[in-house]
Structure formats: C-alpha cells, structure tokens
Length: 411
Image (cartoon, helix red, strand yellow):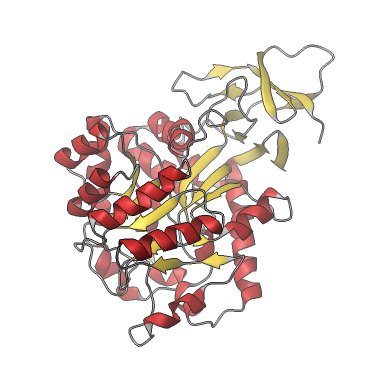
C-alpha cells in the first residue's frame, strides 16, 4: 500500500459532533491524517465518490476469547486449533464491520493482541485486560458446580485464552493483578456484581470488598493505567467508584444518584445493549442453555434507563457490544440500537471519539483530524440517515487501519 495518498469524493463525518461535510479530501501520509482539504492534481487518489466516511469505529467491550460455543469450550469439547480459528475469524469479521480498534474486556491474553499487531492475524487494534479478576464463585468463575475450584486454571491456554483469575482478599488480589500485568495487560477488568452469563451468583450480588478493589486500583495506577468494572447493581457500582475505578461496564441499575456520583468521580459508563438482544433472541447461538433468558430479567430496560441517567448527569458514555460466541459479525448493532434511543450522532460519537477517550487513546484516534491515525470507515449510505447500516457489514465498503486499506469493496 502506498504511504502517501488522498481519499476524495466522500461525505465526511469527523466524529467530533460537527455536521457532515461533502467533498472534503483526506490526505494520508505514513498512516496518519496529514491534511484535510482539496487534493492537488498530482496526488495519488483513492476515489470514495458516493460514500460516507466516519472515523474507524471502536468497540469498548469485546470478548474475542469467547468466540466459540461457551459451554463446549469450557468442557474441553473444542480443540485449541478450533478455538484459535474462531478467534481469528471474529477478529477479521470485526474489521470488516468497520471497527479498527477494540478493547477486549476479558478472555484473551497478550498473545492474540500481539499476533494481530504483528500482521499475522487480520483484525483491529486490540487493547486487552488479560484474565478478568473475580472472586471465587463470582461472575467470571463459570465452572460447573462439580468442578473443584483448584482446577479452574486448567481452562486457560497460555498465549491465547485467559478467562479469569480468582482472588479472595487484598493480598491475593495484589498478587493476581501483578501477574496479570506480567502477562501484558493494558488495563484491569474486575467483576464487582453478579452477571447474566453466570453460574453461581445473582445480578443483585455485590462482589469484592472496597479494600480489594482499592488494591487493584493502586496497582493499576502504579503502571499508569486504570480499572474498569463489570457492574449491574448500584451498591457494587458505588463501591467501585469510591475505590477509584474509572469505568463501569453495563450499569443496568444506574439511577440518578449513582450517575451523579460517577460524574463527580469522573467515571465513564459503557452500556452493552447488543448482547442482551442477542441472548433474548437465542442463547443457544452462543453455546448457552435456553434458560439463560430467565437471568436477563430487567437488564435491557435497566441499561437504557442507566444510559439516560448517565447522559443527564454528564457522565462520559461510551459504546460496547459485549457479543459472545461464534456470531460476532454484527457488532455494529450496538450503534443501531443506540441510535433508536438517542439519535445516530451521539451513538456514533460514543463509538468513536468518546470510546477513544475512555481507552486513553484520544490523542491517537477517534476523530478525523490532522495528526490522528488514519483509522477510517466508509459506508455505502450515510449511517446518520440510515442507522441500520451500522449493523450491516455489507454497507461497509472501505476500511483503513493506520493508513492501510484493509477492506476495499468500492463499486
């Protein structure tokens, strides 16, 4: 791929919230956006006539390590080769859906991220937390009832999959956080409440003490990074916020009081609607039992209410799909669902500029601005006018990742 070219003829939505601009050319040099304006006659051109270009999308909550049927994968019914193949496919499908960056919030370790970064596996830029931190019997500890807890580590596959580490008490937490960073984690993910896809808990359960969470926050801060938490109920969220966590995943009970506390402590919120819709439709598609629907309960309506409460309080609201299992091709459904709740422009901003800020890479990507990485997605239609396009990878005609064209289906 040439290192100096102009993309011309498209409508540009820059991710800052500004109105779209028609015909603005994007000059890409050595992987970065060098200029925005009019291409000179002598320039190398990429014709995007009739397309709409947005920043490359960012999914702040993915699980590439859960790319196979979950039940069989935990029973060792699926070979390591097949597990890897499923992960590689979902990485590629994510890129084809217009996502140039993702934050993996549990299930892989540094091996997959490095394989993608090296170019050996086709996929988006990956920031990852390695194994999730959970307490014995908590969300993330998905062993069967009869499986001895001491055997849980056998589900990990060094260099590929790292599901969770179990901590009970501050000392064990500190040791496991240090081990997680040793394996190359970019940030820390903790489970501080029960979850939907759980075996031994309820959504109303709180998990980890404030002291345990504070230890994780202290260790993350020592490495210049942060803790995000899986959390549904308000008691768990408030514990995490007061302990210093910087982001809440899901947040299906966030009310005005909790949202105000999050705003006070500058804590972000990443709702995850797409996975709830997928599980309500067919849990078996992810290799989960059909009775999983019973655990979902009020989570969908709760996340919508929590999203609105966070917006009202001025909380930074990102975007995550949380898709699990083999069917992760349509992760842009999260933006389609969000568009119906709060219109397409803020949905797009959440999945570009705001997600970049939450991930700590706002200086590098998330908007179409001079000096940023040339991470771009070109659509056959304007997704602000037709937000169903966000969920349809066939509408993505051109994807540029750090200046390299990684998908090109222009007419």
